[in-house]
Every structure is written in C-alpha cells, then in structure tokens.
Image 1 (cartoon, rainbow, N blue to C red):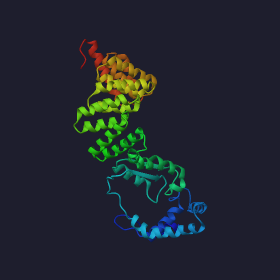
Image 2 (image 1 turned 90 degrees about the vertical axis):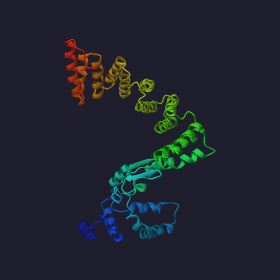
Image 3 (image 1 turned 45 degrees about the vertical axis):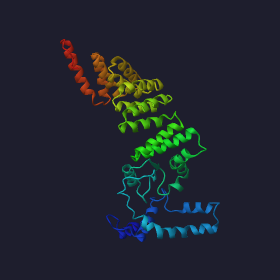
Image 4 (image 1 turned 45 degrees about the horizontal axis):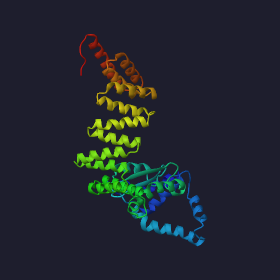
Length: 364
C-alpha cells in the first residue's frame, strides 16, 4: 500500500533519535486517515466545518485559523513532540489527564501507564471512550462535565476556603481538599494547619477530623490522633462509608474494641449489605464474641448465598463453637464456590471432630 511505503521511508523514532517535523507530518497524515486522530473519521473535515459555524468568528477570523496552526506547529510542535516525561515521577500540582481511548497521536496506553507511576497531590485519569486525539471536538459534552468535575474543583478549593463570601461549610471543604493535597506531598505541618482550619470553619467536618487524626497518629502523636478519630466518628452523622474508614484506621492501630461500635452501627445503617455483616463478624471474632459473630455471618450467607467468603468465615466460627456438621457443610459450600481456604477448614473440622470424639481438647 502507498501509505505503508510512505511511512516506511521515514523510519521510526525509537531510542534517542530526535523527531523530525516533516517526518511527523507524513506519519500524522496517514494516522488521521486510519482514524487514529479523530476516531471513526479519515480527516478533519468535521472540525473544519465546526469552526466555520461558530457565531463568534467572522470569515476573516476563520481564515486565520489554519495560518495560526501552521505557525504554532513550526514554532512549538517540534519542541513539544521531543519532550520526554518518562523520568518525571512526582508533580507538586494536581494532575488531570483526558485520555482518548482510540488516541494514537499520543498513545493512550503509554499515557495511562505513566499516570499510574507518577505521584501528585491529586490525580484524575478521565477516559473518553469514543474519542481519538480530539476529545474536545469528539465528545464536547463529556469534556465540559469533566472540566467542571475535576479541573474546576481543583482550581477553586483554596479560593473558596479563603473567600469572605463562602459559607462555613464551603470554606471547610476548601481547606480539607487543600489539606489532602499537602498531605500527599508529605508536607505534614501545612496539612495539619489546613485540616485544623477545616475543623475550625465547620466542626462537623468529620472527613477533616479523620484525616487530621491519621496525620497526628502517624506523626507519633498517638493520643491526639486517636482523640481526633473518635471525634470524627461522633461527627460522621451516620455516614456508613465514613464510619467504615474510621473503623479501618482504628483496626490498623490495634484498637479493635474502639472500632467495634462503628462496625455495629454500619450494619444497622446497611442491613442489606453482606460485606458489612462479614466485617462486623470478623471484629466480633477478634473480641472473642463467637456467638454474635456466627449470627452476623449467618445473616451474610442469607443475603449472599453465593458468597464463598461468607460461607468459609461462618464455617470457621462454627468450628470454634464445635458445631462440626454445620461448619463442614459451609466449608464444603465455600469450596464449591471456589474459596481456596475452604479445604484447610474442612481438614481442620475433621481433625477437631476426631479429637472431640476421643475426649481430647482441641488446639487453642
């Protein structure tokens, strides 16, 4: 094919070879023809027509668009295409990437891989599933929504926090967002100051209290950190997701008993969520409340009979109560559902049953 022969003559840009602009024009011509620039189209005719339709510009203005594009390409593109971001591993500003699923101008796959590696105060990778390189033209509605959701949110956080016109809740949220950004950069003093400002602006901001607690605890200010976490739980306003996060933090610090009331409240708020019952049951097991744990796991199995983890967890609890037949039945069901640890529980049931029949004590 002519296209293959033409592109073949310019070679590739692997290694240290600098990209030549004239070669790039040849490559982009055929890339566009095969839909790698604008998904599903062979040229930019639709974009050209859209420019001409805009009421803000006269015909004279429109005629300058392509001259301006050529000027920019000659003076900017040659430098831009030779930039290498692979060595950049950290940014000190929010990172937002709009990625066209069918973009081959700038590989969307390579972009996504780099996004996973780089660190930033906040990150967002927004996929445009029906776009190539021109998502602002191909999916303008999604583009606008994404800008509002991500770019605008990052831009106004501190501005809102410092605005005399903002409500207490708005200022608190602004300080909270800014505090998260500082914390992710490892700037602990600034993060603490901003989280405290968020709480001062709105004492009911449980998220700020929770993050402040985590920050203080990890800074070897254990007592202050735990106090902030417990206050966050009181201010969580029955938000189950927030209660779960606070309980997880307390569990991680070895304070399972403190987390237990939050786990219980989560189950009360999410009675139809099997995972809530399973997590609460695990906490009850750690507190040696075996019968209560069994009841929670039984409820989880009723809610999700195909959940292998619920079955094997129930089997383990029933085994502790020496209810061997029930434990074996649930362990076998867990094995049928693909739960790998079920086999070990079945073996344990057989061993403990044998010891019990001999009048021997089971292992503790």
